[in-house]
Image (cartoon, rainbow, N blue to C red; front, side, top):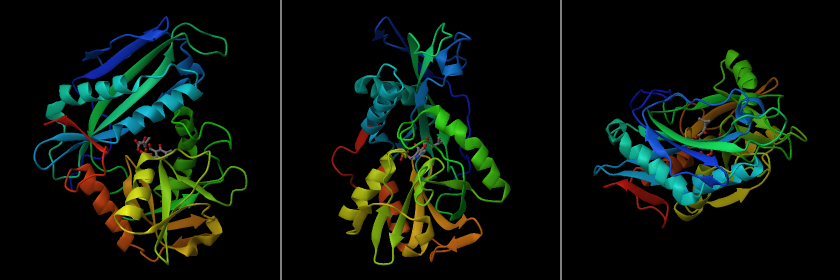
Length: 334
Ligand code: PLP
Ligand code: COI
């Protein structure tokens, strides 16, 4: 396991395209990592922006590949639509990600350390504006950085705590990847970290009885009768990792899968639980604290049987060691 963590570093090239008068330009790769935008840009004042996160994976035979990159492209289109920003065409999104990987190829980690090249595409509303309204000009940018694990070392169980703050409103922006959702999460995360927890668990904003998300990852549990269960809600981000695990749990592991409410007062129904996402991969959950109760899952400090199997098959596919379902992998470099 490497130890580069999840930190920004300046890499040589990033892609920048501009939208003006109804269309995107071709975009360029540039070495300049500082943006020059108008002080009144709606992205700065009214949060008119969204982003994505995906990884380029090194394989044993020296290739570099994307995992379900078109899902990130489509989710960013959904985010843009909700935030009244022009959508980036799918081919343009994928091509920009490819260009950034290839231009920074020397910094893509080698196979073997569970390290990847993380890409951060984003769209911002820019240009002169002061009223509360949409920008007239936009930028689409993709930069990339080599990363290791997001939480502790991958597969090290961590403990979470619920928060009374809501991540989002029931019909708000929770289902899109808007930066404001993350700004709203800084304070709750700081508070639980002060008590030694890795992240907070958000409950549903209407009743505060159901698990929604784990900070910047989705939640899943494995029941005592071996069902893979994950919450449904309009206010959680549709995680590409979560949908992949739903498929793999059913088709590769032969588990029954359920998308339904996960009650915070009924955690005992799960023998294992985990957080899943691009950055989090699969992070086993040791325990969840809710007010004065701490529920420790049966897997405790260890990694539960099904969490490990899901992890192995997921990363096996992502790093090219296990055959992927059709269409999940696209090769960036042979
Ligand atoms: N939930 C939130 C709030 C996130 O930021 C992320 C990360 O993108 C996820 C869930 C996991 O989504 P994905 O598996 O598509 O990375
Ligand atoms: C991701 O998993 O890509 C995320 O966006 C999570 C976080 C780093 C924001």
